[in-house]
Length: 241
Image (cartoon, rainbow, N blue to C red; front, side, top):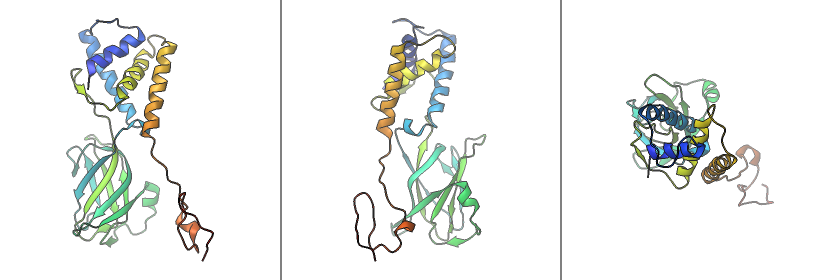
């Protein structure tokens, strides 16, 4: 846990703008809080800075394909930055059916968007930003029965309202935020030391390594036509049907 005010003061000490035991003036509190929220907002679009993938669920309505998502929207949750695998729908017998996440180009090429089926197979996320901070997602085809949708997504870093907020952060994030926010604050004001630059660079690299997704290589299904077994980095065979 770390108070925002303490983190900001440590950042300013790293640049030499504040000395130990110093405090923030009223004007500095307002200015640096706004800067801190700007810094957090910028982190939200860096995939490897996000330390958690959030699961949300929602009961779909039969024949309805598109739903708004965000604060106060149909799916009432923080607006996702991006959908990530896995996403699925669950039927009344608790069977899960995976959904393939598709981009707008693929969704646009679908000829019959009003096609209905019992189980959707794809999901498209329109991250378009609105005045109410809502986006929308569409399942395809629209379900013909009520199903429960499960999605996983990357969420925006939550902005802080006051410097007295006490942030709960995973290991390593406190040093990363303080050192990199110090670099952010120093821009256009004062040169940073080589030591601060190294701390900021190394702490960010450590976070990125920690959050790097595990990759499992595989051969696309279209390349395995005629093969009697699946191939991946764990399984291989010289046998071909």
